[in-house]
Length: 406
Image (cartoon, rainbow, N blue to C red; front, side, top):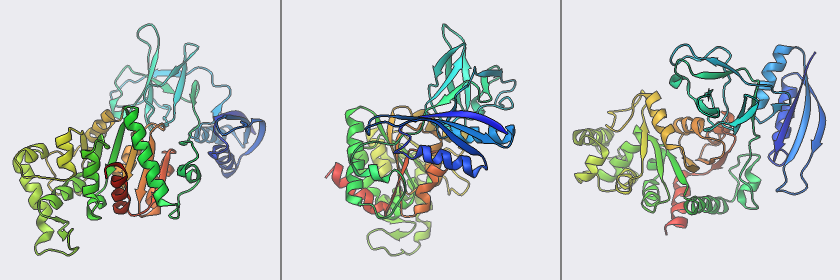
């Protein structure tokens, strides 16, 4: 039998992190013993637990400890980080440490270093130049020969994931996603988060799928952009195309947004607007020329709100602003993440998951979709901070715009 002691610290009781860790141990066929538990007396106090984990052999235990660290459970005896230099650009040393999006520290030269930009599924690179070492997360493709990469799990600690706290609606949304939550309270809570972001000079990110336009919520998002409530926009070719189509031709996928009926020849409407924007050379140039006179992309151009349109293999056209190289698209998104404190994932699966992969756990993330399976995918893929709101995105955005810019 192989044994290791791990520890958890933070709001591990009310966020159900302790229960989740114990369940994972049993699911792996291992066993545990609670060596020490210190439970905070009030909702603002943190708790701590030490757990002795026993598995059938060293390999099973090593895999289990790695899985537990994703939830903030660290080995008590972590030692020093092992650093190995990359020998090829874009290739990591074998056994590299794969990061989470939780706040992370690395022990180098007998001292702990905070990792500058927590992001999941990256490598940890340590820079020993200068008076003190520094650590950062680096995606695989951006690693360069000679970079010192952390290998193994020695000398690495992560903090337990936490959820937004307070007596309001989201306090009882921490443990599950449900379609039966009081939507008025939820929308008011999201509006309050956006107000807080404005007063603290942090930024709000919106990630939009084409359904935002199809449900008629485009004008609501445009109002939020014009009102200064959205500071960054991530989307794909489909969202931008149908936003422009709806404002130039009054249709989305050829369906009239005013009457809800298919228009004659409307199946080609999106292609016609793409073609004209390509003729102008960019969305901004089409706005400047008067071809685009309203909508989300129009308001982004007018307000100077940065946007990234990430491409996919199914894109028509695409619009000239779409970044078809997916690695370059994610790098462009990554460059706009610093300063974001709130993220709204609006009826998007592909771009929401891509964004969740690059967000630190400190970003309050709300995923809105009519399909409950969509809103749980973010948490399933490691974005523990994501809270799901199961509702029609059109109704949600209309009420949110009313609350913030009536």
